[in-house]
Length: 81
Image (cartoon, rainbow, N blue to C red; front, side):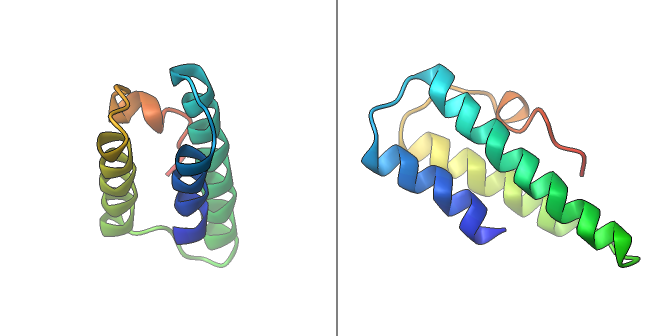
């Protein structure tokens, strides 16, 4: 999970971006986390509530650090967890 979120932060650090391209990266990140959540379910487990909240908080902090005005609910809009 950490590496998936770090990928977005690395993108913001190293690439020219727009709000739309950031949302695209966030959608890709969320899709990867959804796949991970599916793996958990296949193994009779799940991403715990604390982890879900931590993911959202971390994404929020990344967006805030780079002064990107995307609502957190929009940022992780594709989540299945």
